[in-house]
Image 1: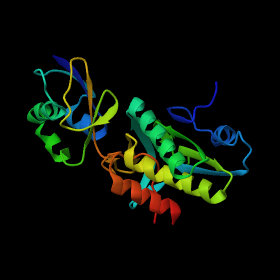
Image 2: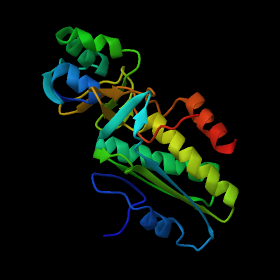
Image 3: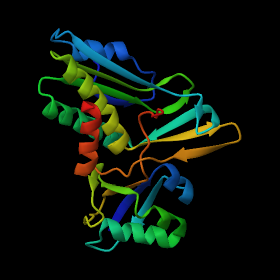
Amino acid sequence: MPVSQVAVTFEPLDADSLVTLVDAEGDGAVVTFAGLVRNHNQGRRVQFLEYEGYEPLAVRALQRIVDEALDLWPGTRVAVHHRLGRLEIGEASIVIAAASAHRADAFAACRYTIERVKQIVPIWKREYFDGGDVWLEGATADPDDEAARQKAYRTACA
Amino acid sequence: MRVTVRLFARLRDLTGAGELIREVPPHATARQVWDDLALEWPALRAYEKTMSVAVNAEYARMSAEVHDGDEIAFLPPVSGGVDWAG
């Protein structure tokens, strides 16, 4: 099955397939990022996480982010897959690959993508820890919030 | 007319339902759909300022008019990706 540029999936993530996808031109600079489930959070010992998503909108939001990155860093190619369902400690919840002829652009596009995912992709995680469970809630999702976009851009270029 | 309401994460927990069918009057907005839900489940009010809304799997405004057969999703603050210290 061909690898999609953006996806949400209940299957384990594969960063290598994303690298192959974005570096089709052989540009030479590929930055990858994998977000892994941590064994601790806010002083709690985490047992596992459960990710839930609004899948059709999550895919559209990921595509929007990839398009934003291309606007900001022309010539870059970004792929991003997000996992859903139960994830054990150390498993990847997200993988991103960004390719460019310029390594600075590849780094920036990769960082921008993870920052924007946290802002506007409708995915939620529930943390199961020793003694209970809790929904973690982050940002109010508003793709048109220009201040949030700028913040992600500044972080990417820091 | 009839719309499908989708609720996620803690909003789903608060109502005990991820999907509801609701009758709404013609020219109803997403806000009216929400207000009706909040009458039923007052605990939802706590999310009024932080949630987002989507109509037919596209982000929308609470003022958006809804139509027969639409899917209206109410989304608590998102927490995808990954967290890291610093």
